[in-house]
Image (cartoon, rainbow, N blue to C red; front, side, top):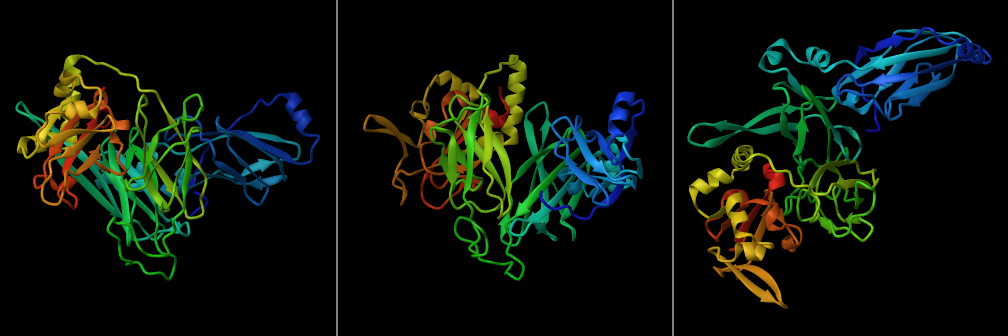
Length: 473
């Protein structure tokens, strides 16, 4: 985030060190100015505060903290001055951190430790007693216009999650949501949340909606910055939307999204599929792991990366219209982790209930395979797994299996795929998903497809749920 917005002033916790060695003092007195150095601590999330801006007021100096929170500012003029601590997380919450006045003497070396407030302190400051009585957690956020990097007031924010209800008979799901609206400064807060809480946050205004981004309270506070691709000042806020749900407003910037997919060792991963949240925009990485998705809109989007042999990854990408910095995504090799039979069964049932599979299976409008059925079939590709499934035909073209539906109406045997709830565009799903990765499969013939997976045309619909998404190890 390149702007520092107006925020509520908050005193920084400052620790002064004494006992500087005589050698250091003697060395520093050779200069008529002072040196400020120290460490910044992240009391909110734990550890050191890296990439924070430390600035001595009056233009006396500025520094950026390193990975260990360390900073040093040389050439500070003698006298009294306050020190500002700035960081995107603090900007998102709306806190301006400043030290008490520090005395700088000619030749002195002044060491300090600055620490941002704890989660409990921030929640007590920002949330009312009535809100805190509902839960100790809170989400703080900032919505910006990606076209101008200015605050986006009046944006709607939705925080959604699923509560799992376990009874003796079954495992049910209950959809939950809380909402907020961004203020004149683009900021919003949602208080009264439980501890160690994970949910999806999404913002929308006018013609644009961000992707749903996962946020986790660790343990009681989460922060999230969101970008909306909105018309520039003076433009229309009610532009038409095309068939794919994208704004047709010519002022909405389309900027290529470039990046690279690597292993933990830093080498490029070739042949990985990188898709944006609209699913129609995707690319396959080159031999060096690089990729380019053309026509990507600015704003907060979600990238999903898949490659056989690696664990899938979902990462949020927030880009302004001016930001063309390539993104780097690291994949980890998939390592099977087997728990006890009972633990695995509970994780499976809870996960399938969370994504709605269990409820749709009870309705019985399609054909369903759970993880036990998938494993019993012992298939190594999707064609083998789905052979014999009602409504599915497996044909061969140039020696390769091709999965089709049974012709119906105007469908001509077409198939729509959904992977982990998202439409899969461009074909080739069997190159990125194999049966050992799957936790469940749903198959629907034309006319019986649930609304969540319905599209135009009389096509068979195949819904694939991976173990990664369901939460089964």
